[in-house]
Length: 127
Image 1 (cartoon, rainbow, N blue to C red):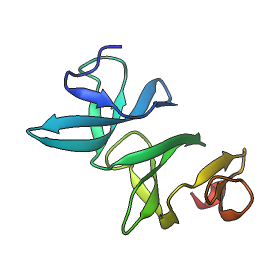
Image 2 (cartoon, rainbow, N blue to C red; image 1 turned 60 degrees about the horizontal axis):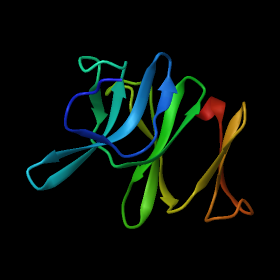
Image 3 (cartoon, helix red, strand yellow; image 1 turned 135 degrees about the horizontal axis):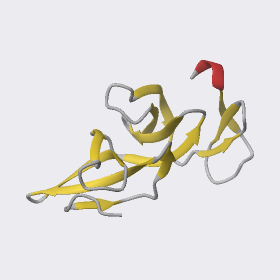
Image 4 (cartoon, helix red, strand yellow; image 1 turned 60 degrees about the vertical axis):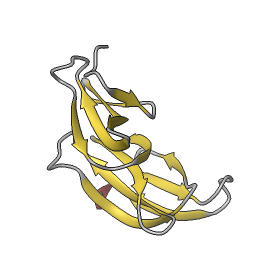
C-alpha cells in the first residue's frame, strides 16, 4: 500500500467497505498532528477525515467507531462513515481504559482491565 509521505500510522486500521480507516500522525515542524485518515491504498486516495487523537478503532454496523481524547482524562466515543461530514460524536465522557465487546445488535464498554463491570451498552438502533 502506498500512502502519502510523512504519515506515520499510529494504530492498526479497520476496514470500511473497500477502504481502510486508521489513526495517523504527521509532523509539522516540531509538532505532531494527530488525525483520523482513510485510504483506498493509493497516495491520491489517502486523506484526513478528522483532526482527533484516535485511541481505539472498531467496526459496528456500517460505520467505524473509535475513542478519541476528550476532556480531563476522559475518552469520547465517535463514529465515522469515512467522510468528514459523517464523523460525529456519539457519547462523551468515558473513563480511560475502556474495553469494548461487540455483538450483532449492541456494543458494550467495560471499565478498566477486566470485563467484570459493564459501564455502558449502546444498542445499534441508537447509533
